[in-house]
Each structure stands twice: as structure tokens, then as C-alpha cells.
Image (tube, rainbow, N blue to C red; front, side, top):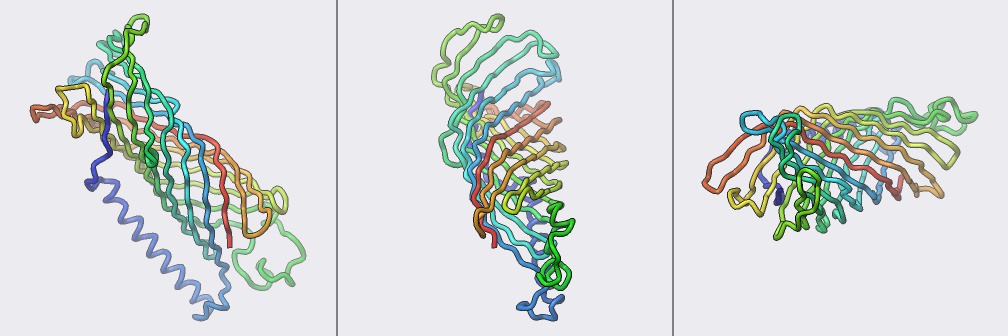
Length: 356
């Protein structure tokens, strides 16, 4: 059982990979600005490319789960120890801002929240295939810090189709050239999204209870338990955003993103293990994972520029074939296989946006 302190602020592979996407997005932003001027003969005041700005504030009532398991040094048992986190409740405050120039959009955002409740289960085995359970404990997992859950992201969005991409006669921007909503206006909007996201959580493990392994009878409290586990996911992927008009003021929003490039880092500090170092006790690293983000929502525009949204959001990440590095007090290290690691977070969200 661990206690994981916050992840060290050393450059990680995810941090090093970030410079490329950020520079690329900055370059794209400059190119888009040049494109606007080129299309207007260098006169931005008469641009034919519509510009949209938006700012969004939301609350996400989410519940998270997570798990990881490791093998013994020689590979047997194939699952020596496993830890599961369940019901990690969090209210996350989220802020987003974006700009769209014609078909092209850039969005950035971040979120913070505490973990108000949750539980853990810790199991150890002597046999392969999760057989010969010899230790089982459970307790609370939470963290009242305001940044116990945190994330940030950047996205590039390309509009495949939608109304008003370009202003001009017959292009959707000149009212005198329109006879009413066309097929595109009735169908809505579709964007291709390319995204980069980092997602981090910090857990405090307390109030543990040891159970008898063969019938899970409570044997008593684990005195002094105050362990930590912190983890961070880095992901790059792509997907689709769709908007379907239901009326002149109500729209259905659908989103699906797939992340084929996911990496994981975790650190734990088990405060009751006197044979483990406490800075940290162990570290997890894994790559080659994948993940999903799904969202469905309804928006209502009571009066421009205000947009109200209510919906449901789901995130998942997983990775495997990683490395578990254990740090002992005598200065030595032990490495074994991190079999699997997974996290998910889901729940309803509510937002207020201003679109100009």
C-alpha cells in the first residue's frame, strides 16, 4: 500500500514531446492569420473569413476508477500484487478558450478539483492467475487538495462542413443572397479534432482495514496508514465533433476522440514499509497505451452571446508492459513488470459559454 507524493518535476518524455505540438500549433496560428490577410488583399477589416471567439466555464461532477498490477521479479506469480481505486468522487472546475478562423480553430483549457471520497482494495497472491490470495486490505482513497485532479489540453479543429464558413454573396454570409436555411444549416456542423492532453491525479490512502484472506473477515485497522499514490497520463489523438440543430436555439453535441498514443507515469510512497525509501518508494512507467473520450450534451442559447450546456463526459486510459521500479532503503533498486494500468473518469457536466 502506498503513499504517493506528488510527481517529481523532472522532464518526462511527455514534457519533451510537448514542445513539438505547441510550436506546431503556434506556427499554424500565424499561418492562419497570414491566410486571412491574403484572402482580403491585406485589409483585415474587410476579411471574408469569419472570426469566432469563445470562453467557457464548466463544472464536472465526475467519478473515477483506476487499477494497476505487477508481476514478481522472476515473472511468477504473474500477478503478485494489485491495487484498485473505486468511486473517486470529484467536482472539477474547467475553463476553456478558443478562436476560429473560417474552417480552422484552436482551443486550450484546464481543469482542477479535489477528490472528496473513494476507496481502495489491495491484494497479494502467491500463485499464477490470481490464485493463493494471502493478503487483502481495503480503506479510503481521497485527497482534499484543490488540485488532486488536474488536467490541461490543446486542440486543433478543422471544420469539414457547417454554415457560414465564408462571408460573401451566396456563401451563407450575405442575407440578401439566401432564401432560407440550406441542407448544411439543417444538418449542423462537423469538425475533425486533433488533441493533446495531460491528466493527473494524487491520492491519499488512509483508514485501512486488514481482512482475513479466505473469508475476508475484518482483522482490524491498519494503524498509522498514510500512503500516497500519484499518476499522470499523457495522450495524443484525434476524433470528431458533431453539432446537430434541434431548433433555432437548441443543439445536440456529440464528441468521440481516440488516443492511440498514451503513456503513463506513477509514483507511490508506502509509509508503513520501513524497507522502502520514502522519496518515493516506487515508480511506474508504461507506454504504448490507448484511450477514449466520449461526450454527449444539449446546448441552449437563451440570448446571444450566452450558451448554456448540460451533458455527460467519459474518459478512459490504459497501458501495459511497463516497468515497476522499487527503491529500497539500502540504496538498491528492484525492477519487475508492470502488467496493466488503467484509469477512467465520467459524470455529468454543466457549462456557461460566451461566443462572439
